[in-house]
Length: 93
Image (cartoon, rainbow, N blue to C red; front, side, top):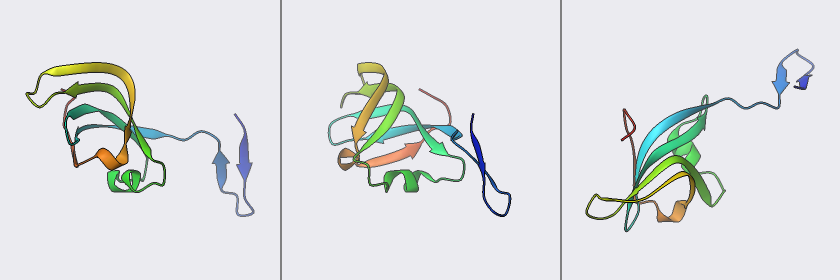
């Protein structure tokens, strides 16, 4: 692991620590339950406003309009333009 120091002695590393947040995301046609990862001092709103077009969702469960499981995947990317709403969940469902 490489470490760098600035003139004031602040330490910089190439490792980024992120926290998993369980969320439920509504798109126009489906709901997606899974985890997104945020940097330690980052809000979900900040993650959604990034310039990148897609958001990564891990442990993803895609539910149809009837609430039935349609698809399950360890990782999916979701086009941010398709998000209608996003809510934090206490526990993965």
